[in-house]
Image (cartoon, rainbow, N blue to C red; front, side, top):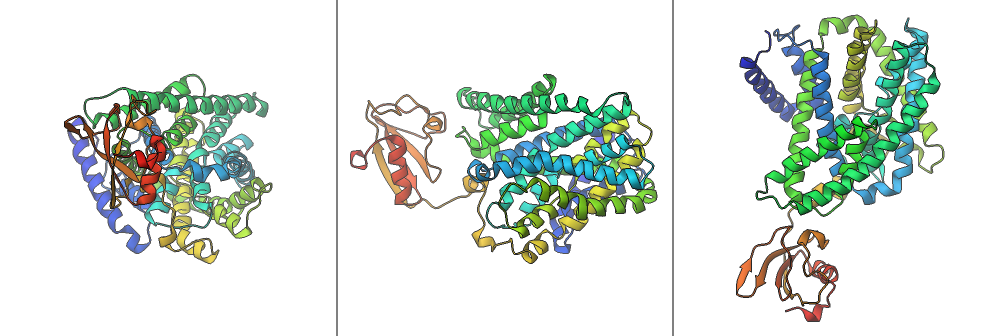
Length: 491
């Protein structure tokens, strides 16, 4: 069956529906949903029911768009306070760790295959990063509670190491195509991508916050749409000036996720749903692109490479990159085990296909097999290995992410009316700029004889009386502190 404008919506919606239903029951059998999405795509493809899809360029476009949403959603859900103590470890894993994985695996591939050294290093680079979609979805769907800073370390690594893998992939692809260049040519590209990506991420994060809080849109539903536009602008402008767009949108999202934003709850809820939609679409698309009949001939060599990556290349890279840091041995082993490969390597594997290099098809099929085995072997055993290494804790002690805290509904048991004097520092400010405690809400504002139902962009006037609800008395105290008034001055 050829995909046409007439049937693409029907086929796409049916595949999406089947994926959601299959995902609902998958974990009862210990199978990650991502594998099912891939499997459904493969069954629907040309070797299955016959849907013809053999366009790496469109698959790459869908992959890049999907990764924008997945990385941005992961960034919004990253707690800066939790990440800050492990910044150095996370940075080491996402740069040195990725580089060592690529070099170690590439060298192994060179000695066991007929690939040239640059082709081998290209393959190693493509699968060198852990996959944000796989790590975020599996950790969260399993509701796995981990000790100390393990979870933020793993999520930060998976969210920030794609840029390094992308740089290595592009660099070694260039060396395969233009073999007269040397390895030294990679160095300027690396620094350019990372430095410009970091600067753009922080810059667009601050600019996005100002735009979101100042634009005053008439409809609440337009704010998530605005954030989508800002996300794509951040990625495309950064990429246009030579920076790494993936790094920029992740940093931008981390910044925004830890700021006070108008209609933040609406934005977070929408991105949570869109991230899942994009994961399904991405894995379905990549499943359609794969021909199972072409995977069979590479199963042997693919399994050997995959096992070497899981049990040798990844652990060695993790242990070497974490040498300067104090960390218990069992935690290092667990970080080594959560080296999930998923959709990102498959998306990166489309670059050699589009470049038209000789062994691109074989490389793509090997990468697909590596991702599949990684999700099956590592993804299904995260909980078991966590218990075995004693790095898990009861789910009741799990630390909630900022989004979970923000979206969690708490009963409000304390109410207080607080008068705002004309000289108060909050007069003339929007509520979103006051940095109001997350455990309290302004339910209503009494202004003269009128009662106003406020939102984030409501401006506080002098002589306003705020009717505040909070979970407890401690929350009320934080409100007074935020408003810079003493409790006895309350109305």
